[in-house]
Image (cartoon, rainbow, N blue to C red):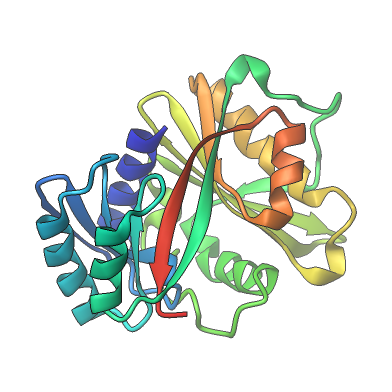
Length: 244
């Protein structure tokens, strides 16, 4: 699951208009230049980070992005915390990685009809809905979903609609027979009616139909109960450092 996630992030950086990506040993730097710390990250792909390489990547990311993060798999030790502190990243949060085999996903009896796929021609509409769904300031996501992102072979965007109005988003990023679930967001006025689950199910159904035999996602505290009810379980908890 971790390898699929890292492949997906590398792929996103290759197609998003302002993407940048680098590698040093097992450490990575991935930038989208969106105004979200998690979308500009220095990280290590292993359970035992290469601190020197991670530090190099942190220097590069911190130099290029105003909002950025350092991420490691598992619980961060004192050395990693000290490294993050040297870069001014003093706040840490747990990030649960949940996963599920295709045969274990709990679907509702009927597929929702309010969710559709979108392509690059609707990138602006998608970005606007994503921004409203996450209750983020206008412009937060910048050109993240612009260019050819939504036309990339490994990426599929989704919009949920009510009465013809977009009210929710989802994103699938598929690598090596695994589908990653991202950008599940519903605008405040449409919450509480099951749209988050409908969008997630659409991502999973299409991913499995395309050959995926497993799925993963990184969950907020608010969404975790929903995903666990769908069959997802915790596989790792990562640590993310930000400036606060």
